[in-house]
Amino acid sequence: METYVLIGAAVIAAAAAGFAVYEHIKTRKLMKSLSDMIDSAIEGNFEETTFDESMYSLLESKIHEYLTSSSLSAAKVREEKEKINMLISDISHQTKTPVANLLLYSDLLSEEDLPDSSKEKVAAIKAQSEKLKFLIDSLVKMSRLENGLMNFVPVVSSVDELLESITDSLSAKAGAKGITITYEPTELSIKCDPKWTYEAVFNIADNAVKYTNSGGVKLSAKEYEMFVRIDIEDTGIGISEEDSAKVFSRFYRSREVSSEEGVGIGLCLAREIITGEGGYIRLESAPGEGSTFSVYIPKG
Image 1 (cartoon, rainbow, N blue to C red):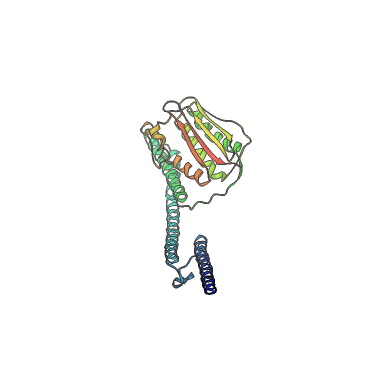
Image 2 (image 1 turned 45 degrees about the horizontal axis):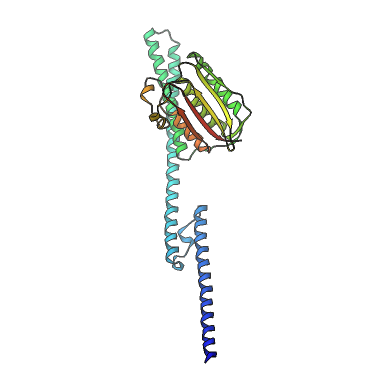
């Protein structure tokens, strides 16, 4: 009798072991199947015909359904981005010639012997044409950045050359206002796209000069473990706490600067560029006490 009991126990144990092995193999196959699905989705190669749904458990079927939907959504997003890119290119191409002609004829008219009142009108036309050109160019850049259509080419670049170039470009504008713009020489380097980084930092420094009526603007750099911080410090009108949260918004202009020339897109463009390069921007300011924009860019 004991022999039969032992044999029965052995059979049950063997069956249990076999069932455990079977479940283990089944679970591993399931995990392998799900892993293959996710890998295909990550690589962008996932297709509904890649897997046989009849072989799937409920979990596999749900994951398959989700990834199929995600794959179709990703394809739709790519298609929409391509359409936006074509639209942007068309807008840029179609407006370039008319604006260039407006500027050309404004220059030609300014050379004519015109009454003073007419000269003022010609100067106004040229100024507004230049503003329109800047706005169109900025909107095209913004749209490409926001839709991921802009390719940054990061290289190791000299911070000193960047700050010197910006200072030289703005020195005449600062001098005309009776203020100074200076930079502190440095041997630091950053990893960035030089062209776009120049545009971002220039936009911030240009704003600093525009809204500073006495004193001046100073550019400097400081090294951190992963970033180089570029400070654009001014002694201008300052920015309120309320406006500090909005100055990087597209087209935003506070009431204090509404009388100044501008379209309110320079800081927004600067933030998009720096963010796209893996950096970020911070602002410290108070009304009447000037502002400091700190641009953090990956270290070279």
